[in-house]
Structures are given as structure tokens and as C-alpha cells.
Length: 148
Image (cartoon, rainbow, N blue to C red; front, side, top):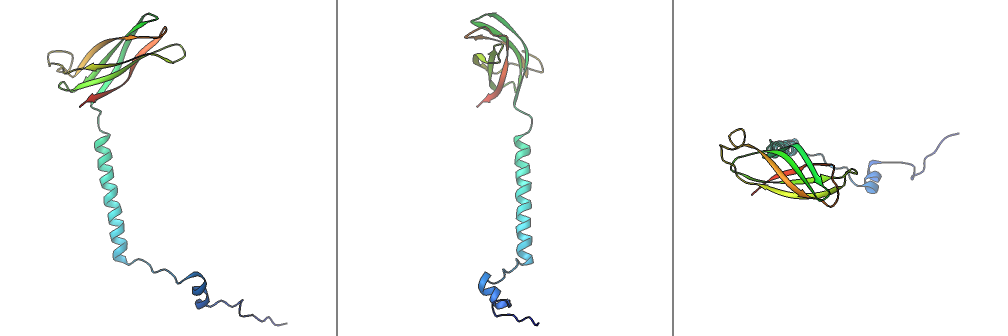
């Protein structure tokens, strides 16, 4: 038995081009070099931006202690390290035994003279009174930021 092929079973380059389109041209070497160089340059620029933005924060805080006086008030003690000329704000919170926030206050820490605090006025101790809705069991600083 001999096998015969029909015209529909034969595949020629022209019929494939008619069906699927002509093959795509490759990018020239010069175009590939330009695209790769632009991608690398963009990557270097992005890394530089991320490095600058993720450098040492302008303000840091450290919880020192807290004192719960009753179900309506608590005191939170913390240290703030910042540029002495800058003004910072810190969100101070008091939590209950279920870790729910029962008191919240934004404290403003103004510029400090070099004679106050530690490290030429960079680090200062703060004690903030926070009103609470119910009895709190812990308190601390949630976050701090520099006020422009």
C-alpha cells in the first residue's frame, strides 16, 4: 500500500505564512543593546531612590514604661531621638487585656535646646497623659514622624 498525501495534508512555507502570518523579524543588535542599557539604567536609578528613602529614619522612639492610674487615665513614658531643631509627633496608645486600643493621643515634641536631653538635645524623655475609655493594661508609642 502506498500512502498518498492530499493537498490539505501538505504543509509548505507559503501556506503556513498565509495561515499564521509571516515570521516576526528579530530586533537588531543595536536595538537590543539600547533596550538592555535603558533597563539597567532604570534599575540603577530605582535602587538609588530606594536607598535614599530607606536610610536612617528621621525620628525614632523607645518605650520606657507606663502607669495606669484608673479606668480613665494612663501615663506613657518614652524616649524620642530626632534632630534637635525638628518638631516631631508621636501617636501614643493604651491597650486593654484584649489588645484593643482604649486610649489614643498624638503628642507633639518640639525643638529641644542642646542643653536638654541626651546627645546634645537629640534624645529627650517624654511622659504623656492619655485619657482612656476603660481600664488599660499597657501603653506605648505606635509611631512617630517629623512635622514639616
